[in-house]
Length: 430
Image (cartoon, rainbow, N blue to C red; front, side):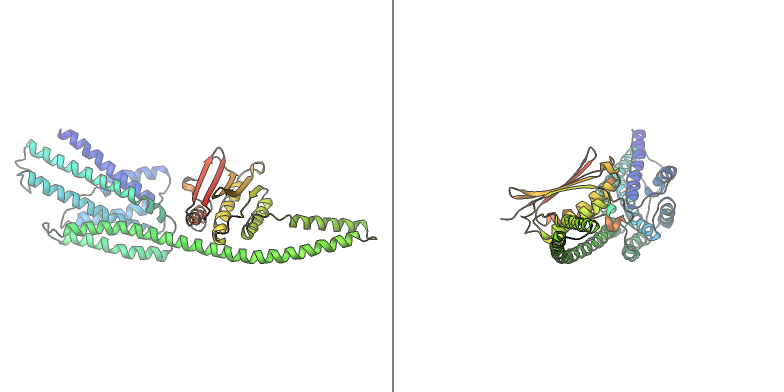
């Protein structure tokens, strides 16, 4: 039975190391090649399963140095990000390990009459109880880290959006508190002091709070950049509408002038050909796509022009007369981002495969928008942008979703059989 429990304990130690290892990989990208990743995982149990006692300087100090060297050697990123990883995971690991070891030890001595500082006189039953209690607390520790990884995964992924050095520095300064508190309380406090437990809990909470804080700052910056971009688009659209009206008025007069010139006799064939060519160009311009919304007219016209320049077949069937309740900024967010993403995806295909279809109309009491484009068979993981500047360009879909949510609508995406379809449904208010 003891051997079985020892085997279970061994597996739990490695399982605990694996969970924390995966959390770290979510926080920071690992170096290549794959051999380094294997080496990093094999070292994990020595760092993450360290046994910590009260007044144990070596047990507190060498894991800290080990954490620093481990992250510096095996993980990529700036030194500020790496420092943040150390200051998040070190106090949490030390606090959890100390709490589990100390609580397990106290429970064992309450259940048995074993002496505290020697193994002399231990019976087989004593060893069995000791191994069983140790295994149970290893299981609790692994369950704790599993729960933490599930809760924090979303925030760990958000932190990967690059913060500025000042923001990383702010997070690191705040994370000094749990590092210093866990180090000093375990080293300087006597073993029987109950205050160690709540401070360990506070250190764990503060460390994980640092993850949430970094994610919150990242999201705030992303939202601010997105809002600025949309405001600039709105200002551009206002100017564009005024400019379009002025230019169309001029083109209308030019068309009439050309008709008068064409009706006159005596001009050469070359002049006649030039007049005909100019008239055709004006007619092309006046073949203006009308959606029922002035702002959307400008967006569709711009995206059509951009698509033609990139040899993309762009087809639009849009009846947007029932869109008066939508703010221009939200129309820009929905159609601008959707069509930009479709154009970007189409550029990666051969010219024969480049096709974008945009449809929008009222269906009963819903405003339905669908943008479809051909795509490469494999999408980037987690819908990440392929552009280098992921922070500034990685929120196209999220901006669409936010704009749609304002009106209690729904946004869905589907990628299947080489086609990507974005569908938006917005209820029309009475």
